[in-house]
Image 1 (cartoon, rainbow, N blue to C red):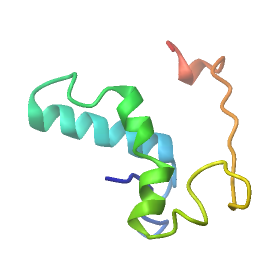
Image 2: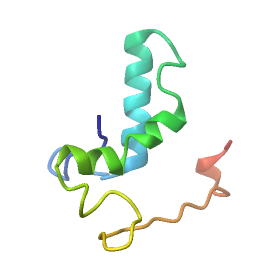
Image 3: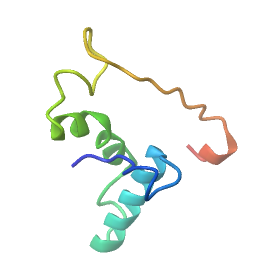
Image 4: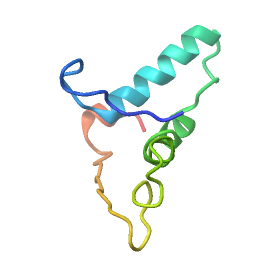
Length: 84
């Protein structure tokens, strides 16, 4: 399973963190179990599994020499990231 925003045509935010949150909440509601997809597991479903699903894991998906990479720094001190 891979998580990613599906595009600006149907989602005006393109926010991967919002997608991870939504996936975790929907799965928890469907399973009636708040522990079915913890935050760590939702985070693990982002980039590497998406690259594998697209058969691009030799080019993208991890910070490895020779692969293309985008990196994001998240300030966990911001109010909307609390509590951590």
